[in-house]
Image (cartoon, rainbow over the protein chains, first blue to last red):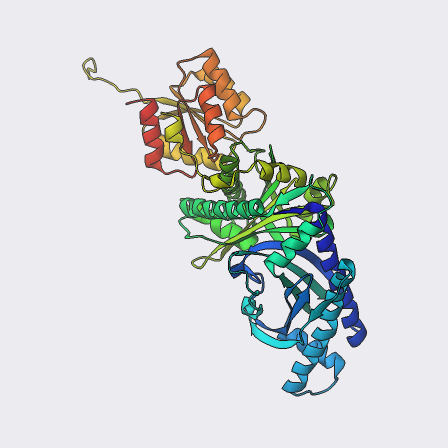
Length: 404
Length: 130
């Protein structure tokens, strides 16, 4: 079964417009202006859906929907956000029941707007169930997807919406039934030329997860800090949304441009505290000076280099090719400022981009690292075409065998 | 007067380190300097070829991904001019195709970063037995 890039782009656009419609309804009801910050389709492990939600109290509503497209969708917001919204709807003290009812009604109106756009595009009707109020901590708020036990990876549409002048944001998650979505993508595929086999995309996702584990092992070996690969996923987003993949805070790390099939960019990024901690763990002696010194950045540069190789070597070995990359370039800037020029360069040839996002962390030391890959879309397609699924596990190469 | 005539002095193998990372050059120097003489440290493939011709070391520890000229090209040039040169690729790249390219260029050994002292010493012992 294949999906074509055109369909992915169209569906991503539909989800984005749906979220905009939902946001407009919200603004009309509450008088609070809001914008859809980013919408993306992500191929993610079932267990990792909603992993980006921080460990705080969330409330929301969920619906099931049926029709040519079926599945489950949820609108979630942190509890303080819901209080802001219900207060805008019902100024003054409101009871818990009234607050829940308010959230349900807001959710009902917003999500209807979200679903209707899909129905119009598909020229069909999509029915949805009455809203169910949900609450939970972090990713536990996200309802399980329905059925599809045969697949451990899901396509998830996620929109992030931010209120202007209010420090609140909420998320729309759409978890289509796997078969329903893939059937739809196949039906709406415009050309065979730009189609990607779904099973190969899933294998590529697995390879990236393996690459993240390898990079985490390299960190552990170089620093002595026991590091775990946390999550790795492939997203598909509009080029203009690519820089928004990063928090708007300062990062330190490396960027390399890789060549071959696929070509693109790979970033290894740390927040400043993590960068300092991990660099100091790499050095046998205590470093001089406060903040990030030249010694710190030299260590980060080399760590970025080694993590990059750990990440892309598996691709090269499975694809039986070599992926060359430039020496690492040190970056130290706001996240979006780092990604902006790379997205612009990739965007010269494509309107959407696949983005591979991986995170790793440790409990011992304050340390988090992110790896982001931005491959050329057409070359990624060519690489996936050439990918032999049966070689998917062969990510490692043994120099001793080659140098006998 | 002391007489050294019968004292056999063992020369330490001379090593050239080629790596664009200052951090990695420092790390390799720390690992090697107890038993080896570091004759030079360079940052790219062009400098590596020049330093090899100038110093004629017993061994080159050669990174692959370096600016200006990469380590495989530099190895090819060194081995073309001196087939008896000993070159160990010392790199973060763990790709099978790249290892084959290194073999083709004439590399004698290949170790992947991150490494620890025993694996470095073992690779050197394989190429330049003590």
